[in-house]
Length: 315
Image (cartoon, rainbow, N blue to C red; front, side, top):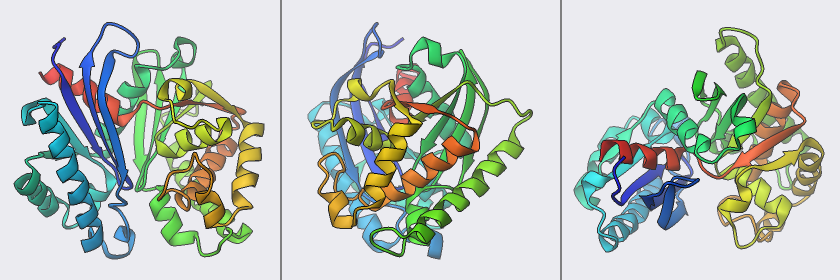
């Protein structure tokens, strides 16, 4: 393995994240030099018109200019940086054109990855921190702004992986019409999620449901931080935190009873996530119910860390 400092950037449909790290021989196998994230909401309005809108592109460019300055500050060259874009850029008609604009203006080369690549990178990041007992047999779900990935895995093997166009930005724009959320809005989100879960199950070669459920990405880590009232946020505390179904139900009922301003006032819910957390609740609830899980293990590491691990193989 290379021993050099490298960087990864995850350009999600909702959040952009940057990790600069150096390899170690421990767990996790990296030492964070710098981490930063920004809620950009790149996928805003995408499902309605099929393109990245002007305001979303402007927010994205602002974030990427800032990331490019950070990479220069820490002396991480372009060839030691892997930037991956997911659902928003791969689905938008102007995604490739925006990628070229980013390269011209910031020097950051973006790889627009497909759902299978996204799932495999997420799995690599999760495995790097997941407790061995859980890693023997688990179903991983990675909720994003524009898509959710579902991976059945055991030990070091991926049984199968599928990406569905089920994301929190999509659900909010399609179904969240009231504040506080009405029972009808929330039920519509759950039914949409269930439709996708039935499609996931149909894609499987068999009917086997893994023993453990594992969730990653901003929705579930925010839920975990809110359950624990964890402020400031600490990824080491979140990694391998187990949220029971009963704890989830209590948290769900608390958040659904609040209006947008009330959720924004919760110190563990960062600006820009107060509406999206409702869609996240619906997806989590649908997953728990569909496969009859009594708990889920939550990990902070995922796609970003998997992309960083890939930089080490390339270096």
